Length: 222
Length: 363
Image 1 (tube, rainbow over the protein chains, first blue to last red):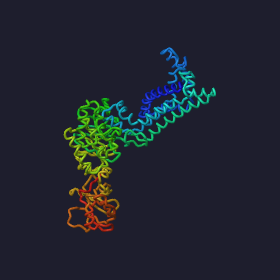
Image 2: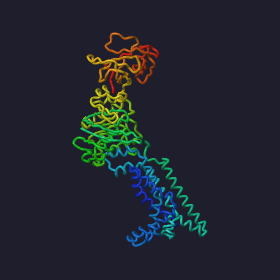
Image 3: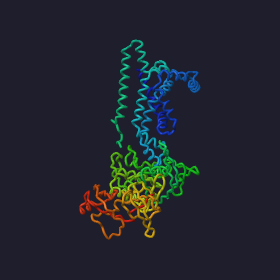
Image 4: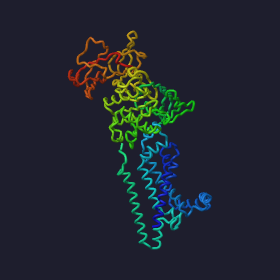
């Protein structure tokens, strides 16, 4: 149960960070007219195609005592980043980045441009237009981004193992815990955790599809 | 007074590029911006509103300079105080009518916002719909809310991009009346884009005709439309008959010239233009300006009487569109009553009567 709690805590932190960081990136991807923006799009999508071990490997190197991030962290907080909860959050944010940015970008792009023009001619600047028009109209995209980030972080294994290792209460998440139980032939225990993860994943995906199927529609269609 | 001298080049995906190059002045009251689609009307409005940056030029409203490429001035849309009602209206779908209207008033104290919103809801007769979302409003109601939303901010100019398309004539004129009443007190320049003749007639004070990115004519609507100098404009302005013709002779003392229409044997007399004998010109005639007779008419002042045969009749609303073959086909508008009284039917021999001054020369 300690592992489940840890996973939940990790997924919540990662989701919050991903929404905060993902929105400006998605905004830029949706509305920038720069021709080279495909480059950033490719970078954002990288974690989808890279094996978690590759991402985890580089994250570990960067966070290690001789890596740039590790050095910075030691200078700031007096201890290393690898094999800590903080390191786990950072690696998970990188790993789940496309799951937040892509749905946000798609829903920002789906908004009628004339609504943004209307907001501007009515005197609203970028921030106000974002908060009062873009954000409310992309609510399904925001929910999808949040839920997918949460679920993806909850289910990750490779990156966590590479960066976090297996420290009870610090970096041992549900997926690692299940692996441990299977390794020690505790199939009953493994099954219990696996079922919980299965149930949570199903619930979470149901939310995404319900929102996208407009089972919840907070405003009338045009 | 709103003035704009703008040059803006728009590259499309193909090799062709479109250049908007205009200089216009819009005084207080309604000025119609007229032209076929693709003439550059929306680009011009977008430039004035600050949604598209012109390559060079100058835009001013009153004493305020909104854009001046020479001095490097470019005010963003949100600082211009120019209201703009889009063709799609662009009401915020997640906000009620009232919230839509209050959107542009965020800087005002709450009390004043409420008062202004209430006043304009009444002026545009939508106060009963204040809590409704745009999805629950009819076409005309949406248009009223969109107008109210633009005007409540007390803008310095108003741009309307075909805001009343798809409404029946009665509803249109009632909305236009409300707009006029509102602007009677404010007296701001209003630039109203349309390509409907009906709206031109209903609104017309002044008019600017745009074609292929240039101003081709400006002045009172009747003058602009009755002397179309461009072929496309003539078609857009409802000249159903647009015929090419060869100049046969010039009678300068009478102020007329004779032309032969297309390849037919039809010869008609038209007002004299800058054309040499033998050159080709275009003649535009409104279907409603042609008289139709079932017997050869005598003793008329009209100089042009053409014999032909009725090819088809097609009723559209309260007018009947008759096609008459005189060696080339003319489109003539008659009333259903006339069809009955003259017992018009296809195949019947008829005579067309054209006044000289109903025949307009176009480029």
